[in-house]
Image (cartoon, rainbow, N blue to C red; front, side, top):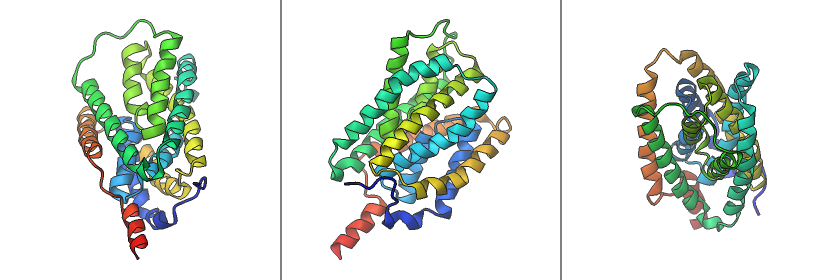
Length: 279
């Protein structure tokens, strides 16, 4: 049985300067573009640091939650959060997150990393495609009314399910849905998304932690770079060609999603464990 909130001994050496640098790079991009951290950070942890996908997902939920606490708190202070929409989304997203965590418990231990990698790839393909559509096409006029409470809860359920399994969805897909179907001002749009994402992340991170899929050492190392990176990105926002950068990042996310949907190779952690077994 997995031990809750315990770092994997074989992976601990990875959680140093390299993790902080990855966090700083992703934080900078998030601060510059507001693109979802899940679509950027989880793949970076898996591909660059060799973190097992299940640990990358569980830890990234916590990392993204802390990052969005800073951002969402700032918007809440400025009264730029539409709390009725947040609450309606949470009615669906919290059960959705719990459903996703329950589904992961049903997956055999030996297959969970492969399945998460495939689902992460699919979510990244969707996120990249949605982002490209959002930035390259002119959308119709803003909506005049929000979906019903049931419809909003259904959107929340899908988001919670997706975030708890892949971490992708809140900052990329959901914000597109909010912009397309909810009559919120630009500042309210971002503030509402961040506030909802933080509260959803608390639930998902706790579930992953008690299932032994969250590594505090990794989360702290990444946050050591991510928080300064987000602040720097926010300060630089508007001084770089944001639209071009977002389009390029969406293309990268889509391309990396193609890689994850293919048969994933073993992570460095899995290879080291296999080597120890052969010895």
